[in-house]
Length: 419
Image (tube, rainbow, N blue to C red; front, top):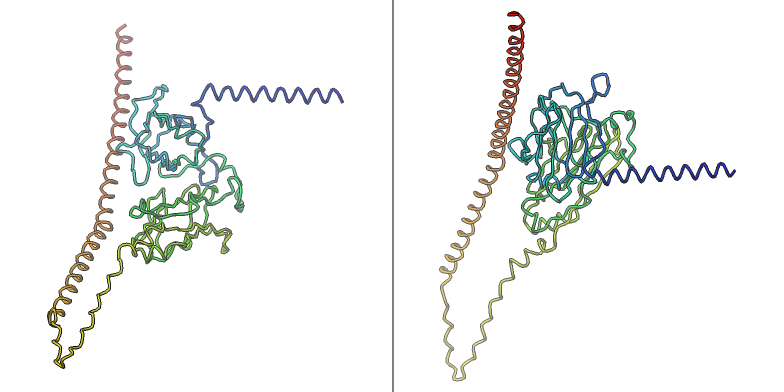
């Protein structure tokens, strides 16, 4: 019995010493982190590793599992809102085969799309990519990889080895990685600060398998602008598919909402809900409700801006004459014809202002729905041209290396032949 107690005490002491050593290493190496492997599944369902990701306090290291492999396009999507807001403070360092980092370049350069929050470039001879933070904000510290970013290689989204090793089974909602759908907000409130730019609801699928969901938004008349955009594809979900569509594994959608500025419509919008439904077969397994609130100041603005017009003072009664003469009739300020003409002129002025407002709304709608896609197409073309130039540069560099090796071989063979 005493021997058993002594063994238990020794085990507890060793375990405490080991924990202290681990804690000390963590304090001595604050920038180090645990590496996690990401890859794809081949047609046979076998997990193929592509990169390892290590998150430190001040940097994120993305390293190829096979240094000889070349990525035509590697795309990194910033998922954390605080990180994407400070993208201008982040730098990118490419690491070559000799494990030497190149010159730091701003992440928010020509290869970064601020609308989709995606950084993409080709990865040829470089064996690793490092995202470095040189501030005191600690944007990466204490955050899991899946909350910071997502990676795709050659237009194939990568999943972690832990997710790929999970068995295909019915998703159990509630705890850990079994939470199939996560929403970044529990409620949305519109106030003066976000009335014009609106709010964005981030819906993610972290279950490791495709999920069928449906998103129900308030009636269209209460919202000036509403869209559902897929993150990786940067494409819109058609309105007729909002009730039921498939959300890929480890992907998500952005729900963009901009309310109507009319105080009456804002009052009707208050108390409405956004419903995110999770389907299993033909049945709804879970429903996430996100209530919408509007600021009271916006709802009562109509009463403050349109005060009640002052009432017209009543004409005091004229005293009756005592000598039997008829009292003079009160003089009229203007004839009825003049009053009618003035009312018609005021109505015409109101109609003219309404027509001008309608024209401005039409011009704004034209700019939003016709000019923005053209600008997006131009940005995509510029990004493709930059990728082509980068690829050409890599190809020229490889050809120069081959010519260099051939010249060295010829120089080595000539002395041997002369001897």
